[in-house]
Image 1 (cartoon, helix red, strand yellow):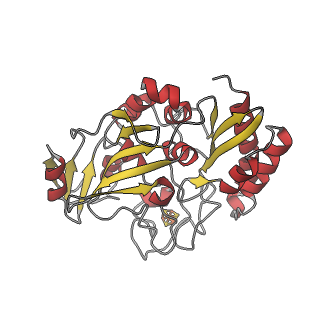
Image 2 (cartoon, rainbow, N blue to C red):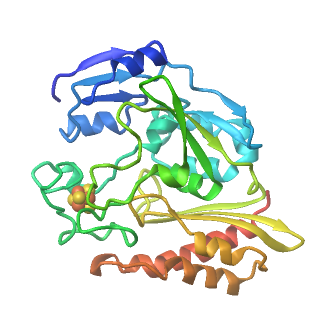
Image 3 (tube, rainbow, N blue to C red):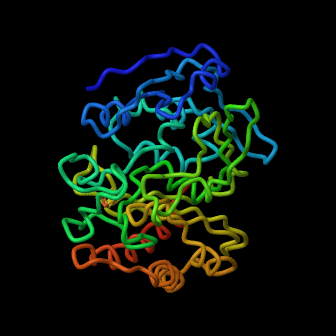
Length: 328
Ligand code: SF4
């Protein structure tokens, strides 16, 4: 690992004023430290922000909960109010990584998880995300785990987070503090980016912006929800395909659906067309199958990841079925 300066921020002001363009904020460190060991990330300064006071869970003016960015994934997933109001988020977070990692990883850090594309980690290989302009090793290489939606010739990587998929289904706003002392809100659907010709940018944060909170939309999927994660082994593995599904039922019909897919794009892939189709429909297998067709109709797989299209359709049907049949 390369030498770096370590700043232990005791206040938000200290963290923001210490920031330079070659700095990284560090909270749990479960992703960043690995990347530094692999020489993928090379910050000159680490600003430790995990002791800042952004660890609460409180009610917000949207009728939902606000969860602190520095709260750990375990504390969030096991929080009484999160479990009762957002069981989809809790279930999703508990499917991620291992208990030890969830105990360390923060919510803000989870939003910023970097791709697990093997070429990104292997510094002897070309990778536009790690080294802009060097090429994309995966484009004509080993890409069975890569994107089927929204990619570009510059990058075909996927977002690895489970939590992000639940947030896309539930709806959320991300609060960030800027280096000039002001703050701003970013709708969750605008937080992450598609790769375009700048795959080195995973999200729309400006340099130095510090994530402080995740404001969750009003909970409407607390009775009918499911997170289906398909992976190569049942623990400590990233999703090949995942689906977060929430259904708000009214008089036997679907009033509103929340649906998002993981393992398929550079950002959490919200299935808006399928959600719109399901609104007002009966929760039947035929309707779930039609929603799945809509969800995958624009997929553009590579030869090696064609399996994701059929797997994705089946996953949508299964997640919706489980969500409907689930007893709260
Ligand atoms: Fe790098 Fe993206 Fe290509 Fe993977 S898919 S090698 S992360 S540019």
